[in-house]
Length: 199
Image 1 (spheres, rainbow, N blue to C red):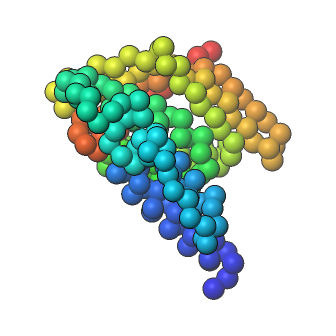
Image 2: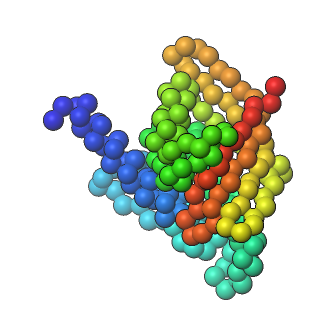
């Protein structure tokens, strides 16, 4: 096969694996870490690395013997971690970022006030990533507000962002307010999203 076809197949395979990893609740940085080693190398994860990458169900700062928090606190902390992770991983390379979107959003989402299907959301994100190949996002932890009721959680807050396009020598940065609504469950999904850049 041609080099272009081989590259496309590798990208497709990487996106599929990353999507599965994200759906299982594991941090996609695991795939980035694995990709950084040669095929003949072996890299063992420490217990703390497995906890940080969410390969195991024990938090990095929690021993297995500690009692679990109540259901509401658990739902809130899961929703916050899920949304924060999603926002900050928008800064990954396009394949990883789009795989995370595919795994994290419901089939239909209230997307900036309009009911939108997942394929349209992916295309919107793809266009944005293409326009701004270099992106970084940092959620302000002290700004986060979360409320959970019935079968959903709403997470809102503020993040700092910077985007660059080296090909046109352009950079933009600023602050944005965000609000995501997620379903509650072992594999949460985004069911509503909105954000607004502060002037």
